[in-house]
Image (tube, rainbow over all chains, first blue to last red; front, side, top):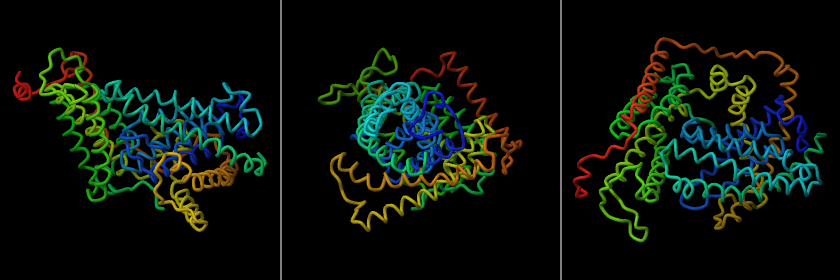
Length: 188
Length: 283
């Protein structure tokens, strides 16, 4: 598997590289989540660490993206004491964001295969699409917690999506720009 | 920066159980609580959760902050839900209204208060059962636990690897922060807008992520040289359920079955409102 040049055929490949990148992404996401513990609810909470999830998905594929979001969020919950599985639906929502960003080669073919500027913009678009769609899974809170749809929209979905969209659109292109020369240097 | 799961329940009765028990109990208990809306039954389940939590012997002084966050978070959600839900209280036809929230006009009734109290107890019960997983399972056991619960070997190894990366990546993050501080970066600077906060995060976030990914080559090479993924993996830690483990899982499985049957019969799926509250509301 090579990074940032994932083709349709090797999207679902699970090699040692996939596992190591997944573990690094999840560990970093968990650490950064704990390091900046966002205040829930009241206002739009920007979580710079979240940009990791769409970036890892976009750069290393849907498997890595899904693992980074799912396990990273669970690890963050685990370290902060909430328990890895208590908010399992939120961890899955994070995982879906990474997964959808990783599927960019299927719906952003020209951007992903273009020059570095196009790939950076493609990362922002893929991340934004993934955030908006992936976090729809938090509507399971209407069943799990008995929350009203209005409550989920106002205090959960919009709060998280707006904050994470800002972070994703700004940080993912920066990360793509930073990673591309390193990738070339490493010979990949 | 010391970021690692805290094994505070070490040596406790619950920590001596097979770690799969703690995972299975959470799954069974959450799906039990999900089916119950009768506040009396939810209260009984909360008591079960507290009794289970006590066996982990997690020192209160170490997790006071965690519980504060839980209470604030849950309290906020329940309060917002009570205000937003308004007159739609789980299909209750007649509401006994105390007063209406100024400006919004949302009725605060005996039923909406009962719903809020039930939701609060449901959340607390789920969080209470979730805490032991955070503090009473040895971090090194998570990989083998999920592997033995049926998660594919490669992903279970990924979970194991994630826990092993935590301390070193935490140290790398601190090193990056220190290096940027020497260059004039102020991590504690108060930023007002979201864009300023993002801009402040870039000098730390980008080098930490890029260095971590670039440094992964050694681990990948080591795994490849040991033929990772070519055959079935063995784990150093062996897990086996004992009689007590089976009893605990059996108990929570019975709770789940009872809740499912009661739910199908419509016994516990309806909101319960205390007569006292209805009387107070002038009903």
